[in-house]
Image (cartoon, rainbow, N blue to C red):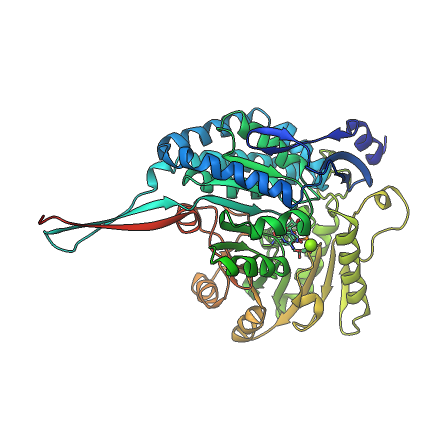
Length: 496
Ligand code: NAI
Ligand code: MG
C-alpha cells in the first residue's frame, strides 16, 4: 500500500463543522461555507462556516455578555476549570493529533502528536497560575494604603495561524481566560478542525460565551474582529505583514496588542562545534520535521569557514536520511507544506537559489513532478552553501525547508550579519566555549537565544520577538500578566 492510499483510508466522509458562539454550535449567518483541504493529497476533508462581520459581531457580543460573571469568578476557580480542560483534552490527544495531521500535513509522530500533548500541558500550566494574579502594595507612609490590582481587560480578539494551530490557540486561550478575560478566537482558514475540536472540549467545561471560536478568511473574519468596538485587547500570531494591519486597527482605538510574528533566525556555529550533536541540534533548530514552517526556524546558518564544507556535508547526509511521506504514517519524519500558495512560494525561493551563481546546492532542489510525493505539497529539504546575507533567501522568511549557509571567520562579523535583519525572534549559538557563546548570545538582537540546543518553546519561559518579530511575550506567567491584565491602583487615605 502506498503512503497516499493509506491517507485516503483515514479520511472520513466530508465533515460539516460548526463555529462556537455563546456556547452554541452554529453555521455562518450567511449560510456560506468553505472547504478544508488535506495537503497530502489535495482532497477536501471538511466544510466549515465562512464567518464574516455579522458572525464576528454575534461572537463578540456573546463574549462581552459572559465577561462580568467570568471576571468575578475567583482566579483559582478559573484555573481549576482550565486544569479540567487539560484532563479532558488528554483523553482526546490522539484524535486531536490525527485531526491536525490531516488538515496541516504535519507528520503525526514528529509534529502533530507532540503538539497535541503540548496543548494539554498549556492548559495545565495556566490552570495553575490563577493564584499568581497578584497586585502590590506601595509604601507611601503610615497614613496611606496604596495597592494595585491585576484586572482583566474584557473581550480578547485572538487571530492564529495554521502552522501549530492547537498549541498556538491554547497559548492565547489559557492565559487570557485564567486572567479573567473572555475571548473570540479566529482559527486559520487552512487549519480550523483541530481548533474546533479543542473548542468542543473547552465548551464542555466553560460557561457559555467565555470562549467563542470562529472560522473564516483573514479579510472577511479576522479584519472585522480587529476593528470591533467591544474588543478590548488584540492578540495576533502570523505574518509580519498582517500583524501590521492588525496593529493599525488597534491604533485607531488605542487597544493593547500582542504580536507574535515572523523570524529569520540565525544559527552561529563556532569552529569547536563541528560535532554530531550539533548537527542533530541544527536539524531540530531548523524545524526540518515541521517542513520548517515555524517562526523560530534557525534558517540562516553562520558556519565558521574552517569547518564549513565538512559540517555541511555531514548535515546534508543526515537531513537527506529523513523520510518524507504520508503525515499519518508513523514512519514519516516530514510531512507536507500547508497549501498550494505556500508550496509555490517555497518552490519560488528554491528556484531563486538555484539561479544564484555564487551559491551551491548541498542537498535538495525542486520537488518531484511525478510519483507519490507529487500528489501532495511535499517540499524537499534544501541547503544552499556560500550564500550571501543579502540574498532574498537570506533576508525573507521562507517558511519552508530551505536553509542558507553563510561562512564567517571573524566573530564580530558573524554577530553583525546575524543582527542584519528586520526580524529578531530566535537565535542559536553552538560552542563548547561558554564565555564566547554567552558573549554572542548577549550581543544578538533576538527575544530568545538558545546555546547548544535547538528545541521548541517551553512553558514558563517568556517567549516573543525583538524588532519586527513582535511585541509582548507568551508562554509564561509574565506573558499572562503583561498581555492579559491591566493594573489598577487604589489609594486610600487612612486619616479620615
Ligand atoms: P497570515 O498572517 O495571512 O495568517 C495568519 C492569520 O491571520 C490567519 O488566521 C488569517 O486568516 C489571518 N488574517 C489574514 N489576513 C488578515 C487581515 N487582513 N486581518 C485580520 N486577520 C487576517 O499568514 P499566511 O498567509 O497563512 O502565511 C503567509 C506567511 O506568513 C508565511 O509564509 C510565513 O512567512 C508567515 N507566517 C508566520 C507565522 C508565525 O508563526 N510567525 C505563522 C503563519 C505564517
Ligand atoms: Mg495571508
